[in-house]
Image (cartoon, rainbow, N blue to C red; front, side, top):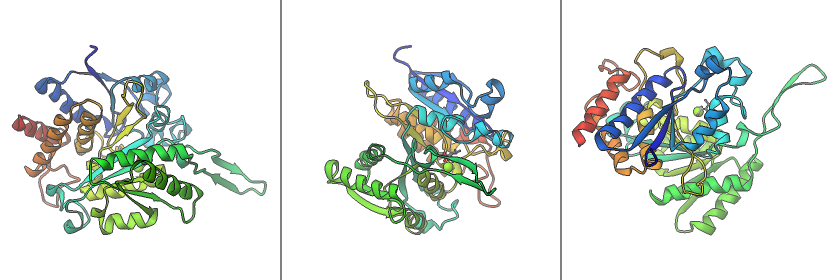
Length: 371
Ligand code: IPM
Ligand code: MG
């Protein structure tokens, strides 16, 4: 099996398993029809893991996830587990934020591309989003998600006080900004570094470090600094100005949900989370849709699997040395949409819809047409 690439599948909860199944199906298609040497493994994380093992992810799973070539996850969690303290996305507790942190997956790439077939699926006007092609690069292992101190404390006078800590060191900013420029170099060469340096100390440091990385390593590319609130506004006002947006963990969470609507639906947005390059040049890598586990529509075949399928395209390109196959899969997704396949999140009122596996069928049929 040495020349095989190992992909670890973790479906998660809610709609996670059903969309991941379609992503895995597409990967299997590449193994069967294009001879990609893939080997699949499966494991549990999230609520499903808690019910079986009493933890949201097992230690051995985290270690193994760092050893395989790529991990494909579905979303996790749901109301059944929400009130458990272990479910809170706090350092080392819930499965997802623990894997991100322990595998050092600092570079979270969330691309938004407006596909012609979906110009009218967005709540934004087609003339605003036409041609959008941007990446939100979110720092994923630090900031307010993990900063200490944190907690809810009782004050002597009986009031309670919640505390979170936003914290960034220069090396954490440096590596994610460097990643932004590396992505931009193969694109339009424009990086927007986004922070709140008008009110936050971490924002001031972020801006200084971004300028330094730009001057020292990428003077031929363009760097713009932008405040987060302005960026949120610009994303809906004139999104075509953006190429790569690099920002911290919390701002990236917010801005990437907003940028999802540039693609028509949150059900379309894929992501890759990468660790630093190791000795052999490989990077720990976890691929997941940006959307949540949507327990209200789980197991009804209503979920859109395209975020998972497009996450597979990112995996092909970034972890499986298969850039041609990645491009082919992206073309197949476009062809499926051009052919009219719509899950209910994408359909206009009155338009007919396909189920979750139905969308998988449409993508596979389009792949068959491409070979
Ligand atoms: C995301 C999600 C997660 C986050 C949640 C589920 C902890 O919203 O990946 O964007 O906030 O990072
Ligand atoms: Mg989010």
